[in-house]
Image (tube, rainbow, N blue to C red):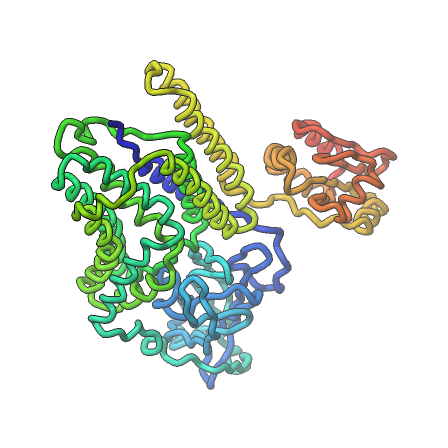
Length: 593
């Protein structure tokens, strides 16, 4: 009997998505003069500036932060994602410094961790006292390293590290600006793990594991997993028990991996493994959504994966053990999107304990999840009461495929707006490639035919990943929003004007963006020739650019680019995709500013 497993496809999807950087951001907002941008996500950003200052009579360096109301930093390593709390470190060949003085933090409700945490947000100042200066010093220089992770209410960004440079006129220290703020209490004693008794915490961990079996993310596949184990185990009670234990071992293996990761992070990096951190990583969320799409296709019978006989042990008593182990591991992975609340509490307690006890607590979670399967597959009377397989089982399996698609859509909806469409396009292409893999060849197809079809499927999937999942390059042209007054003013001043009409739903517009306006030579010419670059967004019918495209420029649709050249009555218009060479030639003929 062929052994169908979905572990290989699932792991492939997760690894592929994890390796592909996806990070879209909107056009930048204005930042105060003198401030350096630290992080940005869409319209949310945070910046910083350093200046000499004095506090309580002590000279030092004021690190002044300023940003939007939804971009925050974590004040404590214990509650910061990955342990990346905000850190400020001053360095100089001219000065030595004392420890930074942090202000009082704000409270923020972390939806992922289901708790209030201490954060810094908006405008605040951190003071770094100068302990000593070089003898006979008049002026010196200072470098300030700022590091941490910035988050919005929906997502945490990649950990960052920025260096700020500044000059200090030490001879004027007596006239430095005096600053003051409410100083934070020591964080060391304020952030503690939950003070659960040992027996209660381990019981909570066990209940957390049991609860995973009723999570909506995992229950669609569990009845099928049990029925498959039962079907494979009809030979004897011994085989039934061993198959069940192999499945349970797969569950425990997943939690053993988490325990090992926790040990490595604490010993090597002095950080903790926080449950839910993975869902702050858009790569992981995208990978999980794609995995669920592939699993849904498996439910629909689009494809199947057979384990080689040497691995599955077709002729031995170990028949299907590798598949059962893999299915147990996959079931544990599938539980993660829906298990924040009780698991976060169990993990929070575990990571305030010594490493051996923390590892035991994590394994207890796995035991709680595995127990029902160990009981079910080791008791023949219970197995006899399970309904026999038939058409109902196939219909149930297909119905659960739609449930998995709903969960996949929910995960995709949680992605940053700039990344959703790319993941959706790739999900459709991936589904097509999986259909090629499983539907275009059969069990009796020639090996050469199978190889050709499946190699093509892999090539198409990889190409689609590079097209839809690669992080967009940074904007290299300073596009301005469509403004008819701005355009007319530039034309009156004999300044060239380039209007790029585009739309978010326009695939051809994305091609134009990548093949024309991402070119460094064209961006350089636009800057050298002082061309006013206008982005005409026609995504929605009532946008000013949409109305102008129809009523002013009489163009039927996008993409279209229009260049107004001073001294020419009619503009130059490009409606196709491959006009980069013509645009470059036209720009080169313009006089430099």
